[in-house]
Image (cartoon, rainbow, N blue to C red; front, side, top):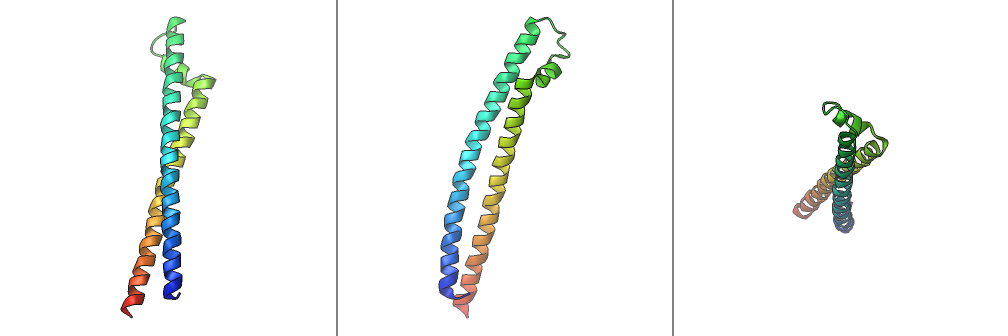
Length: 110
């Protein structure tokens, strides 16, 4: 690659890193929202089961098995994985950028 190509690739990597950071923030907000929704659904189901007189020892398992609670937990787990994946994507983008900067440095030294 020529020096100009390296600089263009570096600028593209910086742009991609910024987009990845924006997605990371969006996924973090979505994860927090889904986590909140799950906790609220779980609390509501636990209170309902207590009011219906179920034994306290099995209420948590019954509550998590309720369809709406299970769906909320599923949505939370999906959002959590998207959040973690976007964080890993940032690390990959930083590695690419670091590699390009090292190549540019070598180009200048030669």
